[in-house]
Length: 117
Image (tube, rainbow, N blue to C red; front, side, top):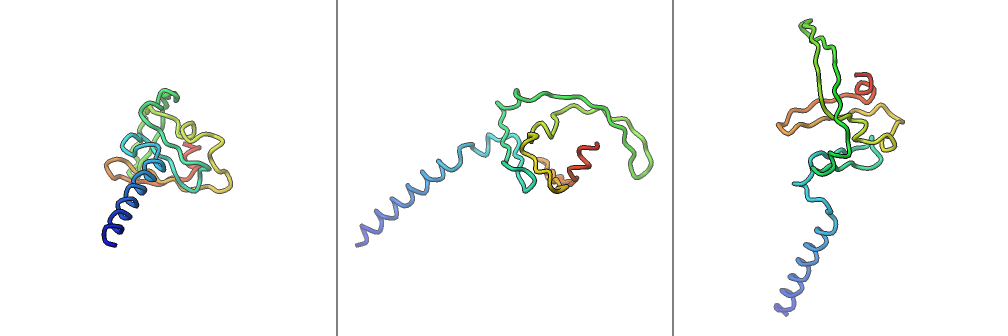
């Protein structure tokens, strides 16, 4: 009886490992950017090889901080709405978007704020 339980346990462990391998087609360590949440129809997974599909853009912004220092900023990067996909964004609510950076810094903006920036 004990031998049957150990064989059954081994089979269950092997099945769990195989099922996890089938469920996660992209290894989390390979993901450069992950966009999820209630405001998108389908999560966006961007890996290192996917960046060539997107165009890098350069934009100039005018800023004014709380101490009334005015600054012109030149930024280069990828358009967030191109990354999300126009058909993938839900438009029924002005969703809040939370950004979490690799160093732990976080900030939140609404979709309308991001589109008007």
